[in-house]
Length: 479
Image 1 (spheres, rainbow, N blue to C red):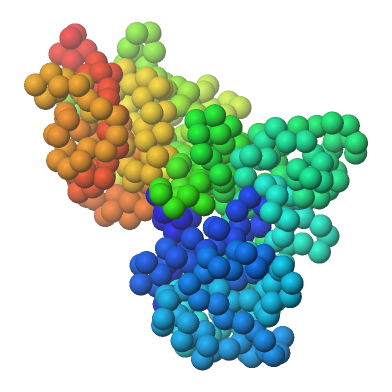
Image 2 (cartoon, helix red, strand yellow):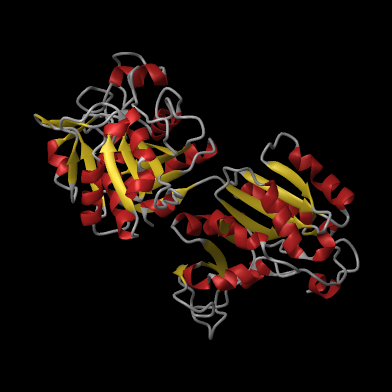
């Protein structure tokens, strides 16, 4: 997955995204890669810094525009030189004149000025290194940091996974005394940084979230993840971020031989669809006990056990009884909410859309679980979530042995839905980029149309047929 996609950026000529990078562990390389990705999409981009950048790093830029002799106001930025560099290379680095081993960047006000010039330049992305870290993997900001432009649309707090396990000393981390103060640690005792501490540094308003402009989104980027051990540690940090409602990317931005983002972790919702009338069953199937527990309670229990940050139960027909059945589960569970669908009779699409509408804005993806699939285990929902984290826009189960007894390999389907088995429509997870398509569906088809449309990019998760049994009729109950 590339950075632009993972950060949910929509760079457009004349209306740029302004991404500010703070922290340590690869801010310059991240800014450069963002600019290069934009240029590869045919969108002009400028990388810059509001602090200083090592002269050795400048060589990685295809073109450099200097501010030599330029006044400090944004209006005085060298428009002609920028336009020429962008026409030649697609993206460029904007810095001040050379001063020894470091070059100063531009001021936050000049970034605002660059944004004002975007329509003239056809500029679609500005990537700003807004914090210094002495090339160490993690830091806590000083009182004057970070130097954030007011026009930032996204602030990304960066840390290198190699900071984990390091001593909090000046040769290992930047501003260790401020890190210790923020974490409430003694000023001199030996301490090695843990995943929980890294997450707190990245999320705290005196750490990675310091000074974020009003209206700017925020994300976390855990960088330099090269091997399985580092991936396991990065996942611990990412999980902490997600529990705080913040999306985290696990990345190896400096590697040119692979996509920069290995996994994206974001808050997830599970929508339990329990609004139907159950005409074929002849009675409310939501309230029928299966193995000693009603189907609606089983569905909600499964969703809660999957580790989602929000669970929505969609009620419709038989709403009062269905909602009363799950009321005991809601006690003390802030993540469980009920959304009533008054248009339940129009079909499953309206219930799916009622669930989407009830999800909080920070939710990055949604799993849909029909109430009449009581044998779905929480582990399957967790594997669907992991399929989405790997970069797929959606993930769905494939029944083992559905095609000539062939085994199913987890991962991309490489084309037709039946390439390795039968792609099932539920349960399934959909990235929020697909939600507009889900909101346009009508009738009783749920998300199957969208799933079919994007089958070539779906992540297939092997599942046992018994897990996916639908209980729609009295005969299904008997069987």
